[in-house]
Length: 245
Image 1 (tube, rainbow, N blue to C red):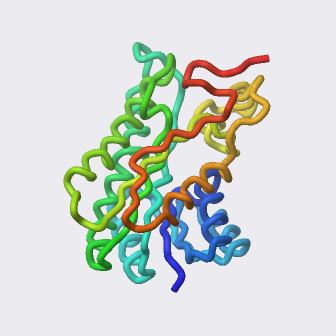
Image 2 (image 1 turned 180 degrees about the horizontal axis):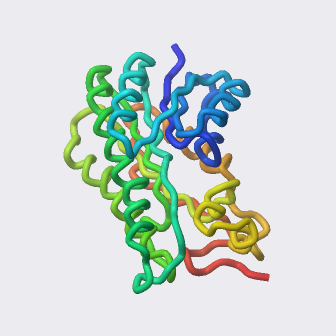
Image 3 (image 1 turned 180 degrees about the vertical axis):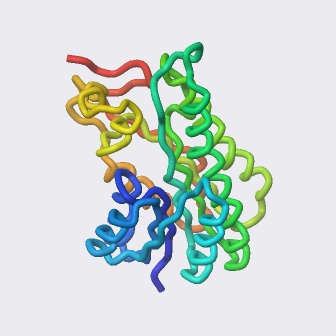
C-alpha cells in the first residue's frame, strides 16, 4: 500500500517541491496552503489531493484534521511558516514578531496537536518539522525570525521526551540558505532586495534539495528517527558567514 503524507505550506517553495518528490516516490499526498489557485495547479501537475487551510485559524485546522483522518496519513510535514523584516531587536515591530510566532510556532502547534491523535489511532506516524539553521543560531537583523524558529524547534525536542516509547517519529530539518520564489520576497518586500540575499552565492539550496532530505528521513525504517538535520549550501558556513565574490 502507498504511504500517505500531509504537507503544509504546499503552495510554493519547499512545500511544493516536497509534494512533487513524494508523488514521484509513489506516496499519496494531501497538500494544504491558503491559496486555492496554487493548490489546484499543483494537483493538476502531480495528482495530489488538496485542501485550503490557514493554520492560524482554529476552524481551518479542525477541518484539515478531519480531512487528514479520512485520508489516512502516515506522516505530517510541518513546512508552513515565514519571516517578516530584518529589523534590529531595538527596532523590531511587534506586529512582525507576532506574525512570525503565529506562523511558525502556534500554527505548527495547532496542526501537530490535531494530528497526534490520528497517529495514535493508526498505531504509528511521523512528524517532520521544517525549522531553519536560524533555529540553531542567530544573526543581526534576525531576532524575530530566530526567536520564532528557536521556539518551533522546541516542539519536537520536547515531544521526543513526552512521547518516548510510542511509535511516533519526531524529525527536525533545518535548512540554511534556500532560494525559493517567495520566502525572501515576502520577508523583504521587493524582488531587488530579495535577489541581494543570494549575491555571490553561485549555488544556494533549492526546494528540491530539502524535499530530497525530507523524503529520505521518512523512508527510513520506522524504528529510525533523525532527531535533527542541518542542511546548508557549500557556500554558507553559518548564518553570518557566506561566500561573497
